[in-house]
Image 1 (cartoon, rainbow over the protein chains, first blue to last red):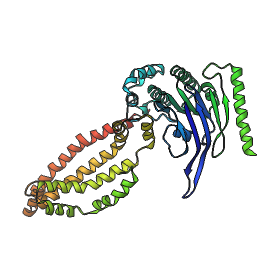
Image 2 (image 1 turned 180 degrees about the horizontal axis):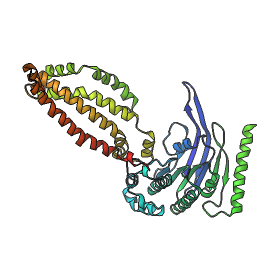
Image 3 (image 1 turned 90 degrees about the vertical axis):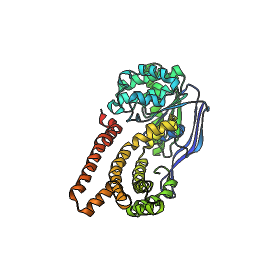
Image 4 (image 1 turned 90 degrees about the horizontal axis):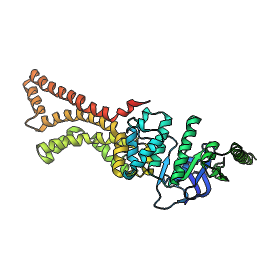
Length: 241
Length: 172
């Protein structure tokens, strides 16, 4: 189980001043569960991801998960090493015993033809696929996805979501998705954590999604989206008052 | 240096001192301390060039991307992989720059070192040509020197530079 408990996260803003940007964020994800943090840009979602990934240790609280668990991450931008070919990019981060699995993933995500190219020669869509394969190839127990499909056309994003859902379910990966796209959060996650539009940000509502990663009936999907939108606007009205 | 502030603070003054000590002082001191030997000559040249190398590579180290460092941390790169795939490729242009400036500076220094304390070498011969006022001998020694530098630049430095920056020419 992944347990996240962030009491406060602050950044130094002035000489003796610090600005708190996250406060009282507590949630957990059971093995194989997918959670989505939904909220507007610029309210500390990526900072929370960095904390969970162990890249930011300057916060009050703790993040716990079994020591044997492996963590994979997809950053907001593909972040491939531009001076290494696609094939080398994958080889460097994938352990030797997972190379076969990596080849299988390359097949699933249709990347076999592009292995000899450099990242600069790829379109954004292809680069994002490589970043996904890189994170999945290490057979992670926890997968962190920070806006993994942002700025892709909807059709491609949809295709990638379907492929990703299959791999997550097949390998029972505990996943945390950060997104501002409500449809993406509904399509992928079992539970949605709505981030408040305040500074410091916190989780103001948790919504369960029993139909995650299955073809949601259009009516049910609309209802769920309505519910999320109502919760978000209720929060906004509260802020305004 | 360039990555750890404490090391920067400790070594910065020494780098500045070495950078500003006149080359001639280092050469003469080296000859006085270690005698008129080849080792003293090589040591003096190396000590003169060292601060320039340190400063160029330190600037490279300062500009290393935190994003790739984060990537290496998340994907648990080994120390060797971190050096080979993250640090050295980013330092490549700085290494090439220091190679180029270093080679030209070192050759010039070698001549002065030879002129001052050696009984052989091009520097010594140039000094001889100066004393004999022999222009032809002077130019004859300068010409192969320039040619050799051009050969090194064309066949060693430039191919290295092309290799370390070949990925830059591949934008989609």
